[in-house]
Image (cartoon, rainbow, N blue to C red):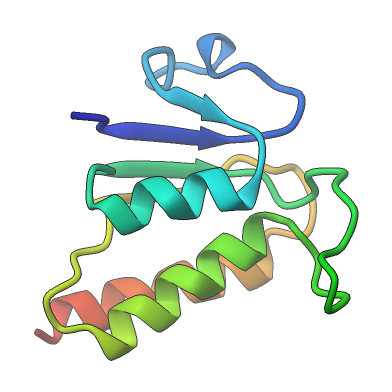
Length: 110
């Protein structure tokens, strides 16, 4: 079972205390696939992944994962979000942190 997922296009989790054993993914799609499978207990995301937008013009970034997770928790009472939600980006953290705060609030109200 995978317990930790590290989403970043450049930085290896091995250089970050507590995340050395995380599975390193480089796209939001990979992170969402693992989250959807229910095998993630801890998630750390970067904001800017340096990827092109999708066909609809939606950015492929860490916020996309946070929004997917927030929507899933809001609409599926059986889905459990990871216990640990972390943003390891230096910039543009507030949107993701806001989504993670909302996810924790929803999980705590169940």
